[in-house]
Image (tube, rainbow, N blue to C red; front, top):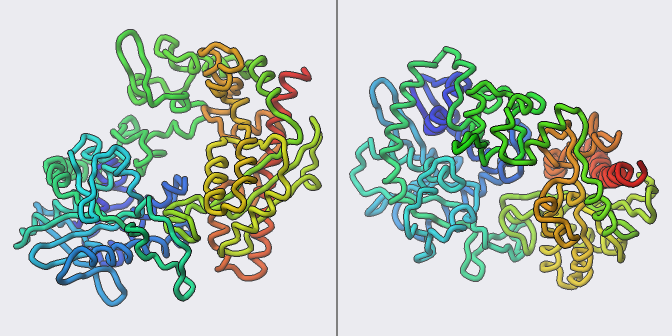
Length: 570
């Protein structure tokens, strides 16, 4: 039986994965590469906001991951001498395998370097942000080293820790082969400070070093992965226990692994079936902070094990947050919670004309255009509905917008079009941090439009403030802190979410159902695949993208009018 590095990690996350992807007796390089790609694509998808993968997602992102791996090898060659082996069509990656009992543990290495010492470089499609945000690493000779080994870095479920754990498992397998030379371990990740200068060679971005910054940074994780070895060995024993207990057998329905509510659990919907139930206990707002009864704190899993599966099942004595008590009451009474006065005062801040604005973006792992960084939310489309008076807006006649015709840089055209239409008034968005950040980024990249873009930004008002609230805003409107931080509107059909897709159906009859493109991920994947489409498909998809983005801004108008009808006209 062969257990690859990826299977090792997945099996020890959740035993249900054992029968979802069973171990094999023979594993080819292609088999291994497919597993590895799936794991690396998941990292990319997490940055895109995708929760599940399909073949179309993988196919779309494949070129970007391949480029990251190639750039990691080039960066390694700047630092190390000697013999290199990395993934090219004419080479196979270096393989390590070790036999423990009746199991053969297997891994391949992204970049293998051998001189006086051996250097293992593992490429990951994430950025340095996850590693540098707590100031734990310091840069020496353009390689990052940990100043200390924090608990976060040792936590395999932590944003940075799970990448390090991946290499720790690889180290475990490599060390069992008893290499004759010292082995060093590095992660190769995208540099979040790298700003592309817009230089191209043969029609492709030239990711040369700029102002001392390389696209790829190496992170030395020797000490951290060494400290993880004891835990990896314990996990290996757990894996073998799981194989003996669950291979070709069902995991009991009442078994909940430690990762049951963590996004990294690959069997989330299987291990926690109540996730698919309306108003399950997992729909409690701020549920990750736990619940209290007396002096005891309980997690969601604790309450599930006590037999509480839905919000209405949980006794009030466990609900230490007022918002959770209100959620429960809205379900029992089957009617929404409304703070009319807060909504009324918020509505007074909106001035006409109203510019309902929404952007569609492509957070590409590699910067595509001048001024962009890895995973910059590159704007390729905007939708705008202009409303001049209360209660009146035509979905078609009052709509304006721009959609890039291909994957080339059309940001300047988009900016000109947007600035031509937006004058003084309220720029209404939903969840303003996204649009505000895009406007600020564009103002820095295109200084000739800086004043106009910043004026648009200054006039932004967040429609979410009227639904979910904004503590600072409502305190300024003379509401108490407790009332200011409480949501303004909550309907039981929102199921713990304030996303516009959940709010829209409870305040209007507008729906995204039966639309060919019905969410932002579908939109960015459609745009990313423009160059692969035949003319007929391209024309249809282009129009579908316009229709989708138009729906987003018209939806804001519908939510605004829905709230107004509730508090003013009734």
